[in-house]
Length: 179
Image 1: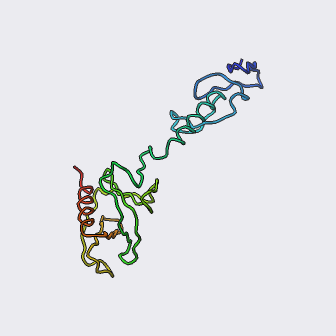
Image 2: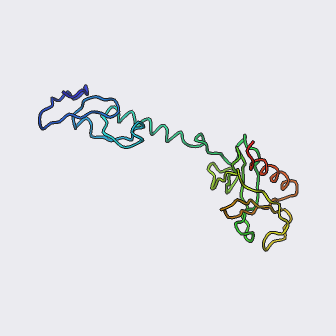
Image 3: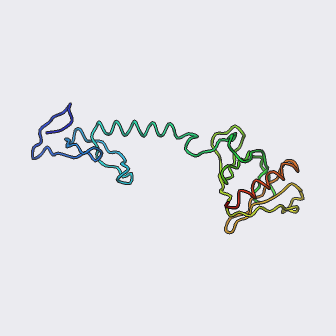
């Protein structure tokens, strides 16, 4: 007999019983027509009873709704950051785009604006070499530096002032080494 209280259908040779993979109840096919991703099965979908499906679905929806900023994402105006501010960024040293950058926990986050919630790019800074370059390719701007890492393309940055350049150089150099 199906163990779901609202059903209680008897099993026969053709009306088979199934086990809910979440709670272990013996249920009929009508009460276990749903599949859900289960953690102990490494998130593989398995047959679950209707009450378990409802609970799992509610839990997943709550987790999905709470996965905004609290999931490790850093906002553009994060209060606990090491340094934040505008820099100009270039992949080749020729064309420059003004972006908002945040360094937090040895990761450089890039945003289009300071009030953005989600970063457009994140770069773990450990292992990078910070080089202050006074003669970047096709540009003679003094406030330029770049990040260099073996096997990665160089990333060029330009600060808005000498004071900003010194702050960014120090913060990036501190973030590139493991303490």
